[in-house]
Structures are given as C-alpha cells and as structure tokens.
Length: 240
Ligand SMILES: [Zn+2]
Image (cartoon, rainbow, N blue to C red; front, side):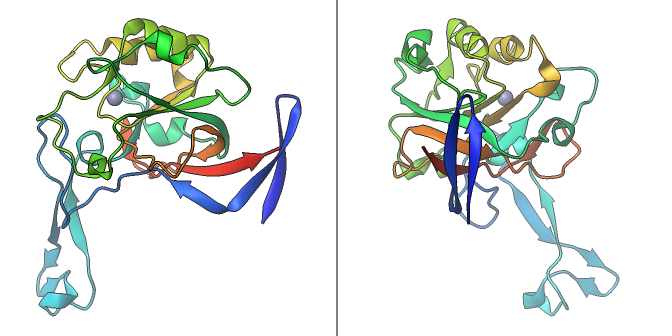
C-alpha cells in the first residue's frame, strides 16, 4: 500500500509497507537497560484463589502484573505533565497520527549536543525531530546509564530546536537534560510555549540501517493515564 501526501509545497509518496520501529521495549526476562539507577522492570503471575496466571504453572492462561516506570525502563513519550503540579496525561496530548519528521545523527562533544550541531537543519519535516547520537551500538537497548555519562543538550541547542518549530522531540538517551539536573532546564525551555501540543520521547534506538533524512512518524503511545507512557515510534519512508 502506498499513499501520497502534501507536505509544504511538495507531494511525497509514503511507503506504508515497511515501517521502521525505533523503540526499545520494556523488557522483563531479557537483559534490560537501566536509567537514573532505577529498579529493573518486574513481572509476576497474577494469583487469585486457586488461579495462577502462568500456563507453565498449570494456569489456564498467562496473566501477569507488571512493575516498571515509563521513564526508567524503555522508550517512552512524555508530556508537560512531567513537570507540572497539575496532572496531565500524555495520551491526551499525543493524538496525531502521521507527523513529518527529520532524523539527524550527531556526535556529542563531552556529552554535550550544541546548537552548532543542529544549524544545518531546515525544511518542511521539522514538526518532529529525532536525534541519534554516535556511537550507535545496539547496546543502547541494554546500557546501564549510571556507568556512562549520557548525552544531553545545551540550553542554546534546546532554544534552537524550539525556534525550528519542533513539536515532538525524540532522543536516544535517557533525558534531554543532564541526568543530575533536577531543575530540568531543557524540558522547561521546550514546554515554555504551547506545551499542550508538544511531546518528548526518550530512550529510542534507531539502528544504522535507518538513514538520516525525512520520514513520517507515528508515535504509538500506549493508552496509559500518566505524564509518560511506553511508546513505539515508527517511521515511514517518503520519496518525491
Ligand atoms: Zn524527560
């Protein structure tokens, strides 16, 4: 299946057949990533009366109770409710289906992503922006971030992203801020204007086979009544 869309002044063909998934799922049995020193995600079989929610233990079906944090255990999308006293749910904010997006790869300098690294960005596909950082090994899916200093933005870089008109920002590290910055300066810069139209997605993983360039993005945020929820961002290739 293919469709044609108009973005800016140009028509593009969208390849709907081969979506590129850039999520790290919340894992329970496999090796997991660890961010902010959080506990690993856990699951246990639901038990009630004589029922056990595990077929291997003789139950009629599998039914597990999960314990995890969207922020700590995998790809997640968050809204301004992350930093407000008022509780705002991301599934009320992330309602768009296909969003023009640019994927760009940068090499942080001493963990920092600066505005100079983002100066070449322009065009009609900046409603969303995905930042992929080098090195880009698949250990991003299982990395322990208390042992490495993850990348983050300078405030100038975040101001530049806002100026570009980006409403959905995706990054392949645990936080757009330095992990020990409890003021969350960059989150606040991003959500300072029109906060109810914007999301941040952290801990994505875009393998090298997905090239830098333009795509349509479907965020696929789980129906979860929290400031953040596990998400499965998917990219569709476009061509003129
Ligand atoms: Zn965040």
